[in-house]
Length: 444
Image (cartoon, rainbow, N blue to C red; front, side):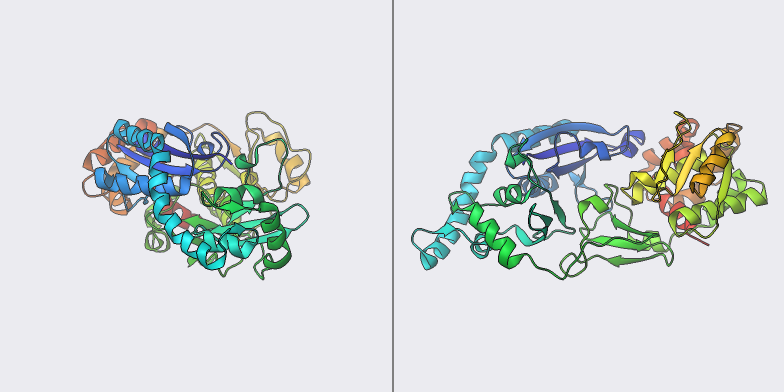
């Protein structure tokens, strides 16, 4: 299983011209993890390493000493010179083998104590022995014994990871299969009989009362800036409950997006008054305003209206805000389908799809017949200049609700000076009023 450390600058910090960068780790193939970030984000470096969990921890410790931690955004975000950060990552990984040898001297001394107690010729041939010498795996659950499929929870993990079926087409080290996970978290200089460990695990240690959790309509698995824990957001009550992977049913990294939101207070207590004022300014017709309210509630909370067909006359502003919000709180790409460009009506109805976007009114009847309940027809009759002036007139209100820090006056002013290109981001950006817009969408 290949492991990587990467450094990147996310789109929102590129647009605000802030030297804020995220260091991260991944065990996904090639650039698969990077593809989950917003379009326009820049990858500075991605480099293969031996143990991405350990390397990330060491590098974050180093970065805290050299750069400015952006704790309000997340523990992986730092402000500083990206070239220096890139070089630090490269130099650390380049010296990784030497560093690991030094680290393993202490680890092996501890393991030797256990080895001498148990057996002079210590061999890890049971899962119990494996767990004794492993300090990075917390729990393993096998749901399909034949194909060795299930879930694995790492120490201090905030969610589970999938264990996939082994594929003979790839090296085991490149896979998130059971053997790949066990090998990735094994200790050096210790002998393992992986066949026996796996047989013992499947036979004696894989049972659990924890099951895979399928979140109901209106609940989302999210992460928060500056917190290592993950949360379940209930959009009907707008409450957030901390997720405990050791006791709650199973949620994996595939159930969560890569976009941490701002803290619980900022979400649950977000002020929606300005959002409502802005939406009413854009949609000056009461009937269309009510339709947009119904549409967003149907999409994010629960389907109450039988059908909603909404015409977006803003050149996609109102539509983009919905799409962006879905993208930030759910990894399910099927929730929204945009056929406004290729005009290909889905042949088979997908019950997971909550919104379908078109620009041809002739498709409405066919889509409703297929079972789609929420449809947006995009039209371009938008005068953005009026909205830009509206934003400028409400500058102080926007800043009072935003997440800019007191020392980021340059970034604030830059955004307001570039409204001709960036006005759409008022409800897109997590630094601005994304939380407020999300709460407005869920307000009945």
